[in-house]
Structure formats: C-alpha cells, structure tokens
Image (cartoon, rainbow, N blue to C red):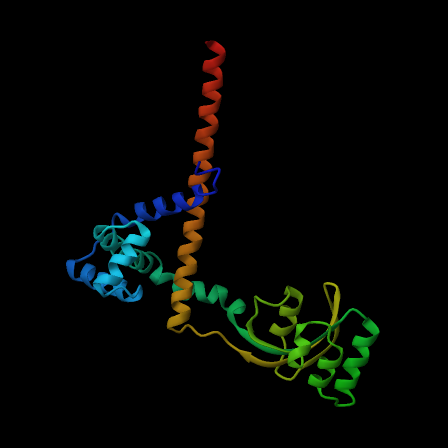
Length: 239
C-alpha cells in the first residue's frame, strides 16, 4: 500500500533521518528550550491551542515533545556533519548564486531583433520603451527589466552572456532557444556568505546527502522485493 500510494519514499526518508539522529546527544536544557521554541513556532503556547493542535493531528503530549526534540537533533546533526564544509561548498556554487539585474527584449524575428539593437546602440532609444512595444515575453510589462535573479535562473546561454558582461554592456541579437534576444546587464550583485546563505548551503548539503541515502535504501528494498518474488516463484514451482 505504501508503494501504491507513493508514500514509500517519504517513509524511507523519515527512517533514514531517525537512524542518523540516534547518535546526536542533547542536554535537558537544550531539550526544554527546543520544546518552548517548537510551541512558539507553531503558535500553541496556550493550553487550548495545544490541545486543538494535538486533536487535529491525533498526537499526544509525548509526541509533541518528541517532535521538538527531533527538530533540535536534526539541526545539530546538520551542523556537526556539514558545518565545516559550508565555505568550500559556497565557493563551488558561487558562480550560480551571484545575482543579476538585466534588461531583455526577445522576439522570434531575427530582423526585428537586429533593428532594435541598432535603435538602442546607435540611436539611443530607451531600452524600456522598445521592450514594452516589441518584446514578446512577460518582461514587456516591466520595460524589459528582469531581476535581480540568480545566474542559475536564466537560460544557460543567457546566463553565460550575463556572467561575462559589465554593467551597461549591450549585446547584439543572440539566439537563445526559439528566441532572438537583445540583452543588457544593468547590475551585478555578487553572492555573499551571510547567515541566510550559510543556512541555505547547510540545507543543500544535507538534502543532497538525504536524497542519496533514500535512493540507495529504495534501491536495496526493490532488490529485496525482487529476490523475494523470485524465491516465491521457485517455491511454487517445486510445490
């Protein structure tokens, strides 16, 4: 039933997490603080709120404490396992985390794209006005302005252009998928390893690990099921 309802990966994921957390030590003070934080985060500090929360989910007070303790252990597990790898991982990812603000005109007509490029480059016509009039995407509503977005967001060909551009640099028409685009970089915003980015990197490292663990566990489980089916068929044939 778990397989048929598509719930097996979710169950395996939680089992993998529980197994990883068995070695994480927590003090009574940490557990108490985690419980209070859990109540506050779920807005169930008041008795009536807490009882309604438990009733809606079919939980007990002991379950509530266990959930809070699990969240604490998970935070500690992430930090203890990958905390010293955040800087190097950030450097690997940085060129995709940098953000750009850019202007874009796209059209499926190469001749029109070339004309618009010259009208901006040589005639000094405002990019925004031409984008509103001629661009065939949603960016027409913002005068062609897009972002700031991370460099992982645009089409890879467009991201490459933006990554080597200088602010204010206008590019001639370039084929990107089915479009001919005229693009200009407005602003480059390098990624910084602040607290928010640190947490994101930590979560990414953890999620990558968890996905691999779940994939491996499901693969083993499918192999065991296949072996069991084969054994059953052999036993049936012998009988």
